[in-house]
Length: 323
Image (cartoon, rainbow, N blue to C red; front, side):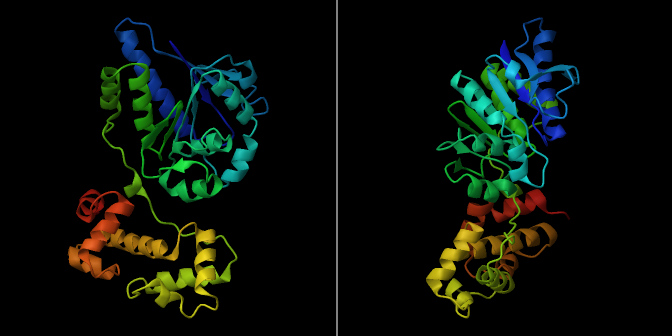
């Protein structure tokens, strides 16, 4: 039997914990129905100072202090519900030495959605492949540059560390873990129970480009405004920044430092985001979409669209068009 420890950190997302419990309970029920030993022994853990630490149970499951835990086979870190991730990680920093201790003892650790921020803060993900919610990727890569972030991935596994992308990607990681600790037949049964598409490996088409504006760099802000106002007509980045009161080298350096990407990639993101909206909300012919997004070369448009979004423009329209 696998000893599973689910953390209840500060600012945890209740829906994330519920999804974890639902899937593991379903796996246990399958074994009970077949009169076999259940695969998962589930406990929940909190810090001593956590708000719920005085409680001894959570929806029927025992809740213990992390100091009381022996070696746990599989530690699960749920997603966070917060508008200030840095503050949330600070409130949960006491988990970090405990995660190191458990990892040294042989534990496997899996994170769901933004739960990856806590594992990354521990340093255990340094040099490892990981993913998180696609819209949280810019903040994650800035905070943890030593992690090999694969924001397009639904699930990652690197050694004894597992991560998942946003929201429903949590179910894909849970299926992966059920298959690992049980078998594929049980994973297939779980997929059918929860109507999960087992083959989805990409989450990039769920992303929305959200430019960073939380800065005080006037030069960078000017470049952002020029790109966003002129993305349809601009031929080159040099054309857009020619009137910026700074050297080209300084503009490019500062822009990437502040936004995390170079101006040319920023321009591509703005254009592809415009194309996505047209594909979702209009019936414009593909040629019109391409031209309205600032592209003249259909081949280049389709190549860049697929690179950023993870699927072709036609497939995106079929998946997301509202009418």
